[in-house]
Image 1 (cartoon, rainbow, N blue to C red):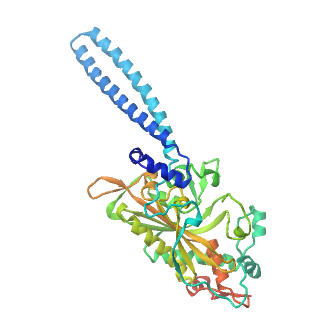
Image 2 (image 1 turned 180 degrees about the horizontal axis):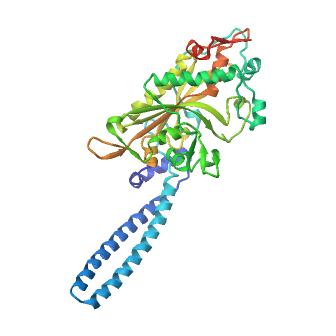
Image 3 (image 1 turned 120 degrees about the vertical axis):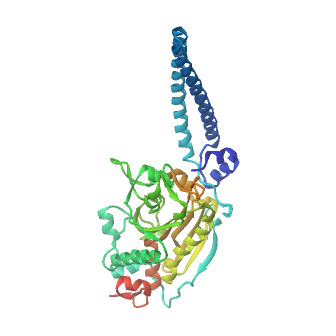
Length: 423
């Protein structure tokens, strides 16, 4: 959420942000409501002050035995109380609508983010490693999976529905190995591990920006008004919701494994087959709480932490800076990390690392107390460290050999218990 004072003082910049992100928030209506709210607050304060003055005069009138004057003043006080209640009721309605519109206003893109409409305007900032070369035509992950019976999408669809994966045998073991490998990698790098609830309430989903905008894309438990989490970002960021953190405790870094659930509305086809797009997937999330002046540098460090997973696994990837039109509703700046899948002959996003500045913290009430004693909103950052489905695609397709076996990177092999998948 943006500070209403910032919107009031920079309406054109906010309108620009809405246009860049394709949001239809009515800034004119928001400013009207803000003006009306401030006027009502002033009127209520004046009425209360007048009522308090008269209440004091009533006491004086009755103390001097002037009952007639006291009764007149008492009637004035009653009418003022009625007026205060009426204005208060109107103020509550205005504030409710104002907050509703505020929740639909997106974050402002950082000044270092290039303008653009879609992925064609994103910028590749660096690549790591080289694309693997084969002396045979590499298979895609579905072909490899079928050879080794690693997953069963057909039976998963029977159990639940389309685009819910089922891993089995070495596939299930590899998935577990990836999660443990990534958690250990990040905790050794200074992150504190959290295993959060996998359901979040409406306040938590609103705090990180998934609601109200994306409610139709979420899986909701109607009876309890709870949501299956779309990302570990939601429960881990909300760990400090409505709290004040001591400045000396910052920065704080957390990582956590969670399953993630998303309807992923959109078209399906060859480019989204198999594990590329699924409604349920596993992920290790990275979340940072930092002081505002360090958040830009912390984003670069966050990306490097996510990259480290791919470097240890020896996978070729590239880092892409998203343009304004590709940023999420809540993000000020985002880098995507895309790993190369040789069987599919394309890059696949495995991580999205974002700086939200104080946008999420303002919605969630997460502040820190400066050494001077004045509370300020923290800056929050998060990124996948990383998501497993597309990572598994890259691992299987990169590690495949002519004889059909799959060679695993040494750091992962010790978690899996063997250096290759064959047979």
